[in-house]
Length: 130
Ligand code: THU
Image (cartoon, rainbow, N blue to C red; front, side):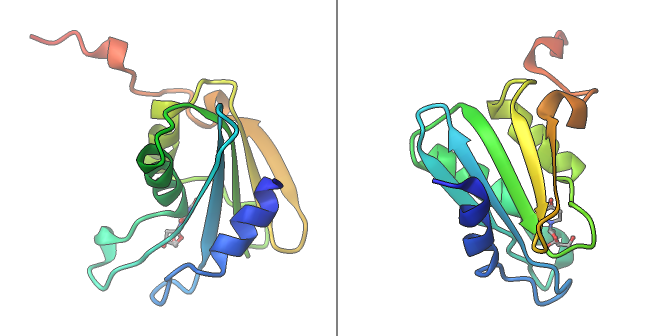
């Protein structure tokens, strides 16, 4: 299954009446199963959720815990990178070498590793507090 096609298909379902910016995301888990999500905005703006967050939630609900690959698509003039919060959400379930491909509708794409997107991740092993 082509992740770009999956992300483009779910992007069309995005609920983005406030920004007008629809985003689709697809995750292939290590198991091979594919999960999708789109952004869902809210009239109380900060309550909206990103496409990547939706795809991560679908993956967890589907019983997978390990990301192999991520693709995000939007209609920007250049490939859109996941926001800071979504980088951290992806990193919770993906290793540093997981490829994240950012696509535009008009065929541009750019692939970087999760490690390069989130060089300063907050990780569980940093929780040495009392
Ligand atoms: N958005 C995503 O869903 N994923 C991204 O990677 C970037 C931004 C959404 C959030 C909001 O609904 C809209 O795009 C504009 O920021």
